[in-house]
Length: 114
Length: 112
Image 1 (cartoon, helix red, strand yellow):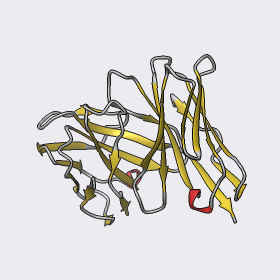
Image 2 (cartoon, each protein chain N blue to C red):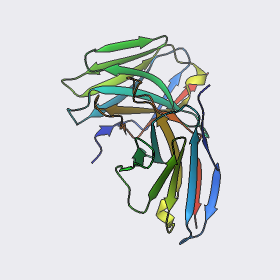
Image 3 (tube, each protein chain N blue to C red):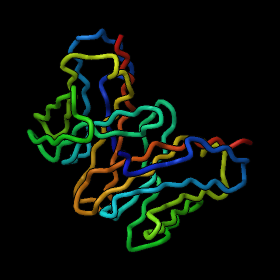
């Protein structure tokens, strides 16, 4: 059974704090993604990675960075959290060998920035 | 500029009836389309997909229709069941890449 896990389900942080969101997948997938989900806006891509130590900006990378030191782990970093980064964060992984382009998602981390 | 749009934020339907969810896109380079289903407190899960070489794909109670000329796709759920109550996201991609562009989602409520 495929699995994508995220380090926290809920987080509360203060404005200006550095925040780390961790994602681990056990499917040996090359591709990993970070999205944020906001009402009415759907899922918006923040960053993605096609391989270890590689990263690509998504549609809304401002205020975020990522790290992929190992194939199974993809971290999202908020260098200085702001209230407009309060959101649901979803990690996903996929394999380029799968034509269906199906992405497997973690359960999400709901982040509240006060 | 949203390249994938779901214009109905919510839909309520009686159990046993048909649910029709709509999705429009603007980027003519998209040639693969997917629907994901999301329950509260869970990540989205893949439901059904369609390639641009087809105009229909069916999987059990779920059928996706694609109208390329109108840049429109729809998801039909027949018959609708209470367990189908969830948020449904339409997504699109170019075949050469693996980056998905999602719509805003439609919340479906199936009433018993």
